View 1 (cartoon, one colour):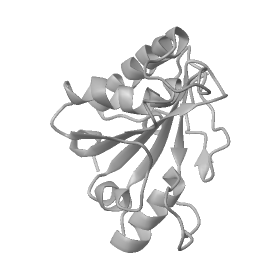
View 2 (tube, rainbow, N blue to C red):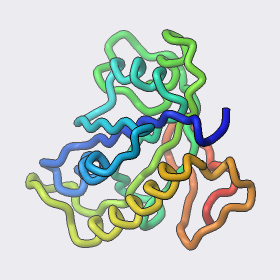
View 3 (cartoon, rainbow, N blue to C red):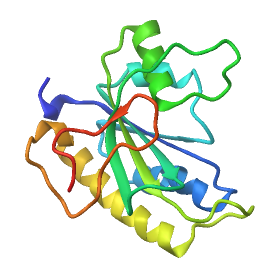
Length: 181
């Protein structure tokens, strides 16, 4: 499939009432008003099994969440379908959603995680810390470029940037080819 034909889903998730944990929904809110027609934007507190149907209806999905550690301002990497879910699962990982999309809908959706570095998670309250806001701005600009051009890092083997990019402790995650150095 040509990059210009890709339908992309962006799912921002996290709890806006827990300070920087709201980075995913904040990115989704900022992106929703300006999303190109080929991009669907959703926001929620957590990923659920129902997200698999939406993932299956798209060619690529970007899961956006806050990261409590890892590179600043963000990390971007591929995520592959994970292990089958247990019966009692009420929240699901990106790899789990990808597995459900594959198993239930025969989806071949490409998956990515955009992990935006946050700093303040231990208090209740809405609003992002100043450092998290700066990281959100950088992540939003990065994602806007990808969505506008529909070209993901593995599509351009020698793509580089001044942004750190690596896989971190996310089951089923691998660093994308052409990762940002």
